[in-house]
Length: 112
Image (cartoon, rainbow, N blue to C red; front, side, top):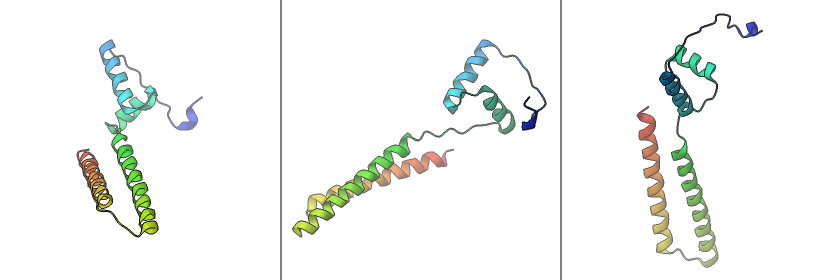
């Protein structure tokens, strides 16, 4: 039935309960539930890279917050014609935090 996909050779093997638990744990870490696809990918390529995007999401939130703060400060400057030192310092801190987050993210990518 599946001959159209080009896979016509079956591979069959047995594993111990401990090995099966380890395979399932690694599948969960890789974010997949398809055992056939996982085992095929591991057999052909030897590795699967699963990226934790939590750091990227945090950095995105921080950048959105900075953009919103910058807009609010710009509006206030346009209305009052005053720029407050507190606002500038808040922006500096925010951009420093964003830069630190970006550098950490780049270090994580470099370690892959």
